[in-house]
Length: 193
Image 1 (cartoon, rainbow, N blue to C red):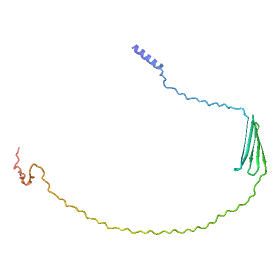
Image 2: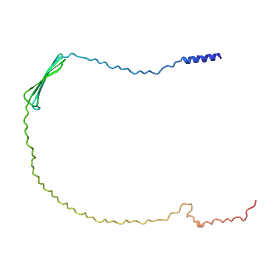
Image 3: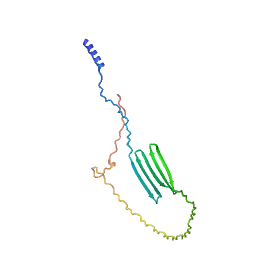
């Protein structure tokens, strides 16, 4: 009996200390770090360019030139304006900002307004159309002949008397040759039991 009590206490103690195995994988959310951008600054590189456009068909007449030395950019551009003047802009951009000097060459010319002639629609003579002449079609009424139907000819069917059925007799039996059914008489008195 002590053995059973001891075994029960041991089982209870073992059950309390038992820990189930953790087989399920643990998921951890990925950690993303914001990308680190480093501002890359390059030392200003010297450059120089220039171009010129003169197209008389499209009335384009301009040029542009620019030069850079370290942190200072200088340049100028020239544009032919529609009023006949030429606009010349000389500029400088440095650590103090952008400054521009604008000049105009020539004098603005605005042509006098001349009233144009009013457009008159040309006078066309009304065309004389002759009405078309159509001949009426000559229709001929169709001539139909009455159909000639011939009455159908049928032959009268020729019936023959049916042959007697094979009964084993040479001639079919005549029902008159049989004797009439016997007549039964009721008994005069019933027996007593």
